[in-house]
Length: 153
Image 1: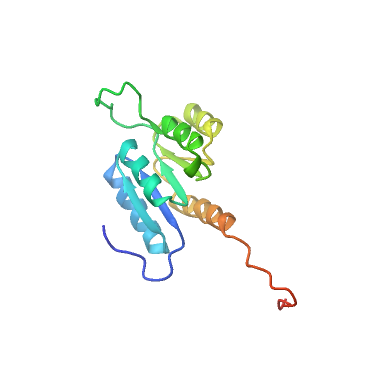
Image 2: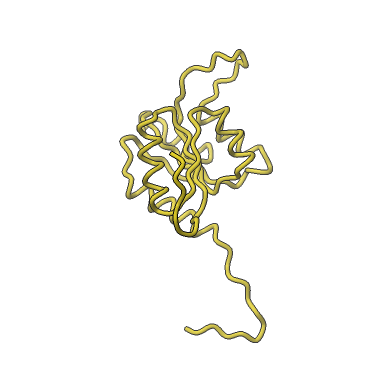
């Protein structure tokens, strides 16, 4: 999965999911739309990518296999959202939860934790794309104004 968009890059998306089928589906959907897609299959790798790449949007699963590293922390999507919020350099990156966890239980918790949206699996790829496009549009800076220049209307 090393193909890059052929036109101008619309933004960087980090997909954090341990399911290779979800990774592949989301990767190709967003790559084909012109986004650079970064992948992580666990929270530890995701945090490294977030710090080095500073993605524009993070698509984050909630549940991951148990971490047997001995750290004692349960490194799940909720933990990652908390880490993002307390880490100054990446605090403003919007997080969209993509999860097979029960929406009735997990969606309110995810939104209360700071996620901007929740998508249950199987994913509605069209709605997910539209949500990411809205987030990207909101991040674009306004064009600089030049004194004395009038824009055509």
